[in-house]
Each structure stands twice: as structure tokens, then as C-alpha cells.
Image (cartoon, rainbow, N blue to C red; front, side, top):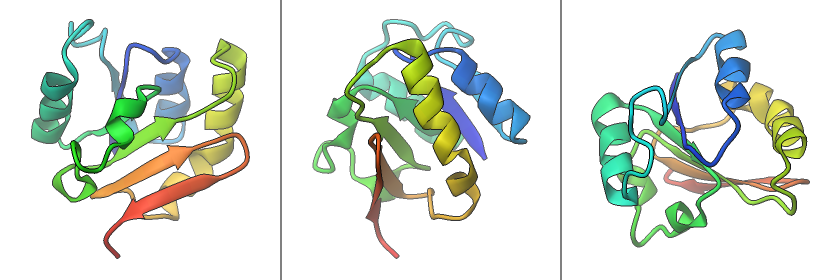
Length: 119
């Protein structure tokens, strides 16, 4: 799978994905830092990349209907400390290959993953 890591996440997320055999680019890699949400999600759509972000705006299915995208993963965590985020993300890496991601929205919390989308 192909992923785009938002600028609000540690760059080590891309390393975790690469080590798991996925393609991962950061917003910074592609000089998209500071890009508006609408532009960022459009780039992800054109590149067929799953967006991974802390930005809860992307969890609004009226603004970003999951069926229109390759996938959106929003981390909703109590602490945005780097090590905490990496620990949470490391726990869900194995789920990426088992659960549907294309045309789905994943909300990742400390103790659960909620998945919205068709099928």
C-alpha cells in the first residue's frame, strides 16, 4: 500500500511503514508542508495514497467521504508525544493487511480502531 504521512506526525511513521513493506512519503518529502487540507487530500487521491494524520477534520465524512479516497487514517490519541504516537501506530501495523483500507476511514484511538466505509 501507499501512504502519505501528514506533517503533524513523526517522520518515523514512514520508517515503520517502509519496514513493513509499504510505500510511504511524508508531506515534507514532497514539499507540501503547510498545504491546505483540500489540496493535501487531492494530492493523496491523485497518487492513490492513504493519508495518515492527527488532523481530526479528516474524520468528517461529509467533507471527506471515505468512498472517494484510497483511505484516511486519523489518530485520535490523548497524548501527542512522539513516543506515544509511535507506540500506538506500531500496534496497528499488522491490522493494515487484514482490514479494508481503500475507501475507508480509520479512527485510531489508544484502545481501539474504528473503521467506516462500505463493505
